[in-house]
Amino acid sequence: MNVAIIGGGAAGFFSAIHIKKNYPEAEVHIFEKSNNLLSKVKVSGGGRCNLSHDNISNKEWLEAYPRGRNLLKKSFKVFNHQDAMQWFEEKGIALHTQDDGCVFPAAQDSQVIIDVFLKEVNKQKTPIHLKHQISSITEENGKLRIYFQDQNMASRLFDKIIVATGGSPKMQGLKWLESLGHKIESPVPSLFTFNMPNETITKLMGIVIENVKISLQTSKLQAQGTILITHWGMSGPVVLKLSSLAAPVLNEKKYQFKIQINWVNIANNDHILEELQNIALRNPNKMLSNYRPYQLPERLWLFLLDKCGLPSHKKWQELGKKGFNKLINILSNDIYAIDGKTNFKEEFVTCGGISLQEIHSQSLQSKRVPHLYFAGEILNIDGITGGFNLQAAWTTGFIAAQLG
Ligand SMILES: Cc1cc2nc3c(=O)[nH]c(=O)nc-3n(C[C@H](O)[C@H](O)[C@H](O)COP(=O)(O)OP(=O)(O)OC[C@H]3O[C@@H](n4cnc5c(N)ncnc54)[C@H](O)[C@@H]3O)c2cc1C
Image (tube, helix red, strand yellow):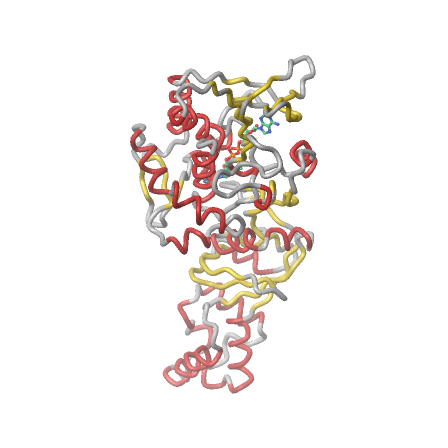
């Protein structure tokens, strides 16, 4: 059996290595269009490679994938983060799990991951063909023929092919797979931060607030977590999470939309009112500026008072019903206009790709073209930030390598 792996990235390498393990007699070839192997692994996690995540429940694992959740639910039963971590450790890579659950090589250097992959494929004597961009695939008597972009290169026939070409930012880059009959979900970016050119809150840049809830106005999409105010708008885990959950919707809106922020992440306004009334009772003569509810950062509290039109020198006892309502509204439903997005430099992914309806979920084999498999970000699977995208590459690479 000879097998072609298209794409020398995370999923391609993981597949190639496991095919040789599953079928030692198989001849495996890796075709990579560029001159570099594993280039995204190299830059991943700011050069440290956040290769997976640990210490969260199965439910949290699935919630980390806005797209691909159902498929991964099955796939993780076959190969999950513990299997991946064990695999890397068995290959001699010590791992470190941060308090936030993100898993990195203890060396804090993505190169150690690359070195292991290269060592494995060398050991397995897997030929790697750099600067070999595949432009099309055709079926031929139960086999598959690949053609190269460079027409001087002769086409080649394989028994099986795994496509692991990663996320394509443009539909054009997926046409060759669409022409084989696969439905493609339009590729759109995921994991980005929000630009707010017309909001003065940017003057609070550097402020971090834990446990806020942000919702996309006029939708049910929302996320909870830590927010960071930046000089261009808002960032932090909660923003990245909402960008991921809402990626296709935000793309449709051309990144012009409004968010509602609940700065205290309390859904029931009566509870907020109770807290504010208690503060007023206990501190009647204190100025609003001198007592911050929910330990909000001082600069944010003063900003919110100004935004809702309450003078900071006003005393807590002078608030009155209108004043309490203004405060409740600004704390629980503070609205901001977004205009544009900025790439999150640590990690960005493409949502969209091969529709999961087009593949057998157990094997990741195409329903349209027998012997053709998919692994990694080319599939319409993507996760939030925190090692989830590379884990999806390991898991789908492992499953595709079973060639089932
Ligand atoms: C800056 C950055 C940081 C990131 N950090 C993290 C992180 O810390 N943790 C995490 O979980 N995820 C991270 N990600 C996401 C993660 O890197 C990807 O989800 C993952 O690399 C996808 O693996 P893949 O093998 O599917 O695709 P890729 O790694 O993109 O590999 C695909 C390969 O296929 C090649 N190729 C494409 N088309 C062809 C063709 N027609 N013929 C031949 N070769 C082709 C490409 O050149 C590429 O080498 C990061 C992404 C970026 C951009």
